[in-house]
Image (cartoon, rainbow, N blue to C red; front, side):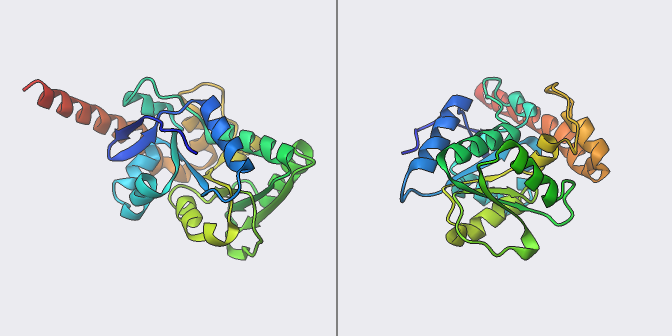
Length: 237
């Protein structure tokens, strides 16, 4: 049974204040349980929150249909400095490790035009998780049996909507939208260890991300600070 974690609200989107060890425990529990609802994890970053301001269906998923929303973006600390940042890369690594140990199957759903092709992901699994049961499919050719873990790499909103629409027949124990996680794990995109400027390297690898970067790096902090000042002003009256 999921613990009752504290929840905060950032521009109308809920986030759970959960630590990495607690998230790991929830993942192991979900993988080991029978007949339990899917553990649906969303990795929230500023871009997600900005997207949800105009995409009501996406906003509804993040507020009502996901199980746990983790903070995956240091910019979210503007809203709460005590948030622990747990990246999609870290969650994916935890899931793959336990899936291999517990003999669980993993399905990766990716885009046909992804920066990292499915053959590279397959090679990565063979080298790093040789005992893992896995399948890597492009969304257009999806025709699969049930899997214990669903890693959906279709990009923000699209991947969360895919999970909602397809869990009934894939029936995963754990489902996560992981965006460009494999781009980082495999090295298609070289992201430095610094917490603050990884977005620069992602932008260089994919210039089409510029509008998203502007919203996340410039507009998001302005809105968060403005909202905080608005709340402070009301409280001081």
